[in-house]
Length: 239
Image 1: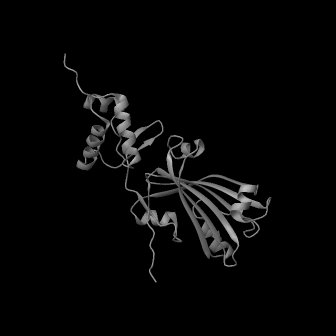
Image 2: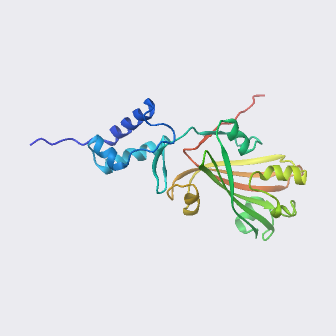
Image 3: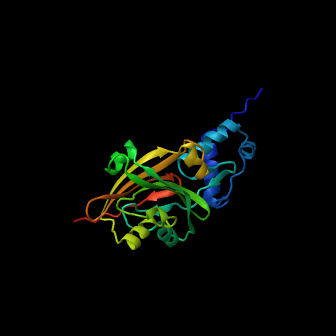
C-alpha cells in the first residue's frame, strides 16, 4: 500500500506567494476558498488554514469577517510624528480615503483618562470614535478625547474628517508638542467588528498625547490599525 504524504503548510504558503508574485492574484482579490485550495494542492483543510495564517501574519493576505481571505493591498505609509491629515496623506498615495464618525458623547474623566491626560478626575471630556479607511477598506479605528475646558463647545463642531483642523481654525490653537507611544496590540470585539476582522486580530496601537503652546494637554487619542494596512515611516533629521 502506498501512503501519500500530505502537502505541508509551507507548500501552501509557497503556492499562494507565487500566485501573488505572478499576478494570478492581485491586491484586494479574493482567494479561493479553503476547500478549493485544499483540493487543488491535495492537502487537508487544517494544513491549508495553517498556511493562510502564516501568510496573514506576514501581512500578505487578510481576513474580512464573513467574506473570506483577500490579497493585502499596498500598505499606507504613515509618519505619526508629522502634523499631516489622514485624508491628505492617503490621497497623496493614490488611494481614496474615508472617515466615518461612529460615536460622539460627553463624559467625565475616569481614573484612566485623568492619569493619561494629566487632568482632574471628573473633568468634562468629549469622546469621539472614528473609523477610517482607504478604497472602501477600513484600516484603523480611533478613540479621541478632547478637553472641553480648553475647547469650549467642541462637541458641536464637525469632527468627522479632522479634529486638528477644527482645533486650529476654530480655536486658533496649535499642537505644540506630541507624545507618542506605539505598541503591538489586539482588537477587541467592538474594534474588530468595525475593522471587519476577527476578535483578537493583531493591531498596531498608536497612543498620542497632544499639548498646546502653554503645555496643557488638549487631546488624547488611541488608534488601532490593522497590522496588514500600515507601514510606519518616521523621518529624523541629524543635527
